Image (cartoon, rainbow, N blue to C red; front, side, top):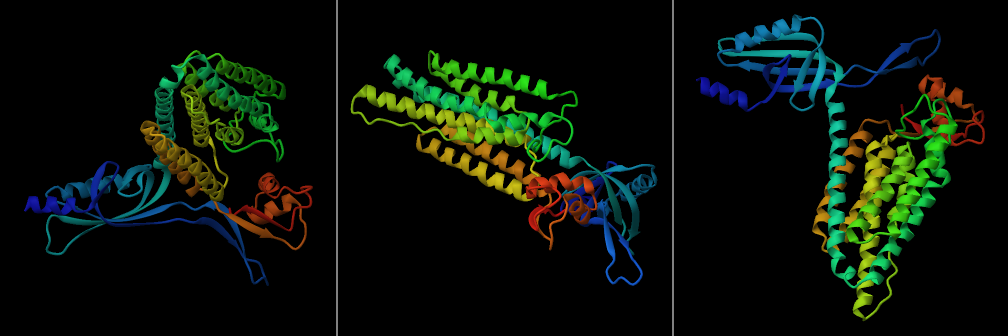
Length: 432
């Protein structure tokens, strides 16, 4: 009989509260916003004041079975009466720190060895969400490192024979890389890089400065930021100069991979990193057809070098996406489409060239980046169209839409008005 009970328990999903296990028959939950309804005399419509996200509640129907079911019931009863919150391990949503609001147990008439239980809990802390985010960030880092190793290895292998022809072929590869590197120098000197670097400054810097995911440095000043950007520009220029002096394929591959990473490291704002790195993904070799063996070697070296340059830019772009924080689900979806298409196109190119290691690494990196962006976007509000009959100040609209005047800078950034006191009559804004 005990074997039958054990088999029955194993057919259900398992959960626990404060380390005490149970078998889950069914579960549910509640989500929403916390509204305070204000009613006024002679007004048909009340005012629903949004006080933030409502507590997340969980309802669980479970049972205890076997010779130790009564002991488990007593342990759960003690856990329900214990002070403070406890850890709930839910079979489908994972670990949550919850307060147990209600615990009921029932013994079936004429049936021994089975105790039915019902629980209602309120989430106090979400452990799983932070664990998933950390795990996805780590997975992107691991996949990016694997891709960098594979790309460098495939480049060395594919150019081994062409570079054996001599210095003229090596010069063709170095010139291709130097031409691409000039774009990196232009990127670090661009207005986009300057405005993105200022994202670390504290305070409200207006609609043109500050992006998604930049870490604010309270001690930063305009002078320190510009000095740091100048130093970073010198580092990027030095890395680009190294391309022209590479002695072999391995050295050239290492130098190419270092260029976009130095650009990314120079900019604190991940949104700015993505903006300046995206143009570097476009790199194509202009090959002159030749029937001579050395002409074919030069063409192969140029094509392989252009491919590695694109891959290096994609590698840094994927790392920037791991730090980027979208402001809405639409932003996350648009970035998923953009980056996913770039990675997918490059994976197809790697497969066509017979670079199996790069193809596999690209597909793995693409999966991790898209999963990370999907997870971030799922937690964010949608975009809505706000329409008003007249131009209103941003502060008034922020109070009307969110009951929070501090949301005005976000509305200004999205609507991009001529003046914040006269917002457009129709613009896009976050739903909450």
